[in-house]
Image (tube, rainbow, N blue to C red):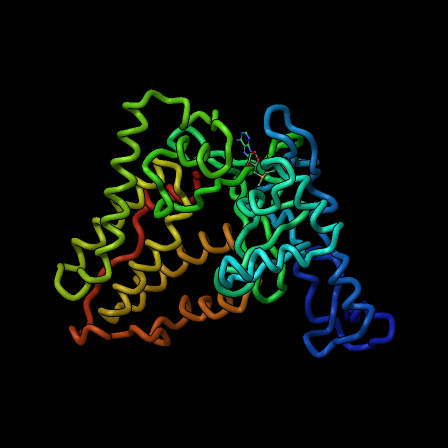
Amino acid sequence: MVQLCENSDCSNPGKSRCWRCKERYYCGTECQHADWSAHKDNCKPSNRLVAVVDIPGKGKGVIARERIPRGTLLVAEKPRIILPATSKEKLLKSMSLLSEEDKAFILTFPGKDSDLEDRLKHFVPCVGDGNTCLCPTICRINHTCCSPMSGPNTSYTWNEDSKEEELYAIKEIQKGEEVQVTYMSNASNYDGDPPAYLRRKYNFDCRCPGCTRSPEDRQVSGERIEAYNDFVDILPGRFKTDDPFRILVEIEQQILIICEEGFTGEIDGRAYDAFQLCTAYEDAASAKEWMKLHLKCRALYHGKSTEQYKKSVCYTKNPQMHGGWGYLDAGSLKLRGPSKKVLECFYSS
Ligand SMILES: C[S@@+](CC[C@H](N)C(=O)[O-])C[C@H]1O[C@@H](n2cnc3c(N)ncnc32)[C@H](O)[C@@H]1O
């Protein structure tokens, strides 16, 4: 039986389901009927899966209303307030022009007295370069650090196509469990002393399992993360000069180390590095395997709905389309895809 587009005045065959609720069908991008637009705008997973509640010792926070499988899009919401990434002066001017309701909303976030500027730390990156926004649900999520003992269960990302802030479950979340993100999203933001950074910037004492370790244990982690960052910084420059087999071994070693430190999101970037290395040596089969791993990690943290993701999917079919194909002029060389250990590291995280 042909499923028709569910817009009331449309009789085309329904080609796709709504990417969010997966329930309604529509006939494609040509379908611009008001009914479908209203559905898209109102189809908010945030209304269903999470709730903003009071969390003792943390102010407000977000909890799961039901068990949420890994990979779920939990929240997709339009920012309530967007501030421009211009000069500090312009930013403060924009703040002063906000409505009284918006100012009152900002002041519901923790901060000094009625100081609006002190609440800027709660804004998250959004559209364009450096612009920030305040969202009703995502900006209520509390922090936990990435560490060998624990880490956040969600990650948020700006979707430029839908112009919404999105929140993905990077681990399974139980009903009633607190939804948490890390305010230091990747290893390159590592500050050397997370509890001190969080106290300075966000004015709270982090009591996560990573921060309550002994100073010696925290130092060991700090040194491993810094060594990883040094590795990442010089990696592209090594493509021209170093043995590619050696580079792949080191990429894998570094992936395993940084995942032990709780930064599973780093697999995305390192798998992409390995993909680029394989394309530089015109090894399509290995490049495809690395791209598949890159996309799995990317989908987990950023979803699959963006144009950028869809474009990258083409590289899993045809790595020759990538601009770096053969760029080293070193001829073709059979390298290899990710090892079982690295794949397990992604699946077991
Ligand atoms: C982005 S807001 C999160 C929502 C906030 N709890 C609220 O009441 O609106 C960040 C602020 O939440 C609090 N917070 C976040 N994570 C915390 C944690 N792990 N422990 C204690 N307070 C935390 C701090 O006051 C921090 O400045």
